[in-house]
Length: 127
Image (tube, rainbow, N blue to C red; front, side, top):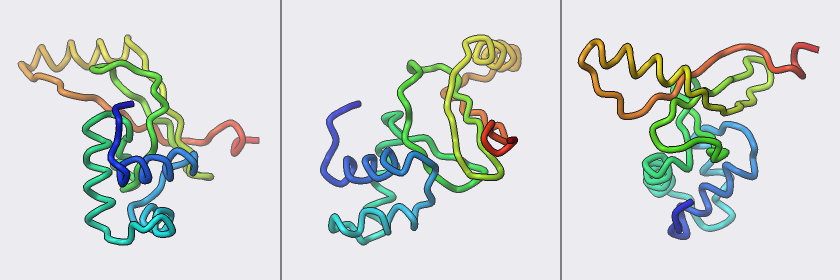
């Protein structure tokens, strides 16, 4: 990960320590003891962390999760999201990314990034 400003590092650390997706206001509550209480400060940090690939936004849940670093730039990211416990797991698959890029190119569309969200139940919640 790129060297971060103090605020960016605090926001990233809070997400990483949580080990699960967090909404922005939940994240603000987590970093408040460190002196960050203003929503714009947290949103700026999140924007920068997302641009760097250190954090992913989960669109369907309006939440954020720390990147586990399992991918390279340009790879399709798949987030599997448990509907029961809220956990998120990240992985990549070159075949999925290749299919998306091929279909996009066929439509003369240039892909900048791909994040797929898959909803379901994790192994623990199925038991």
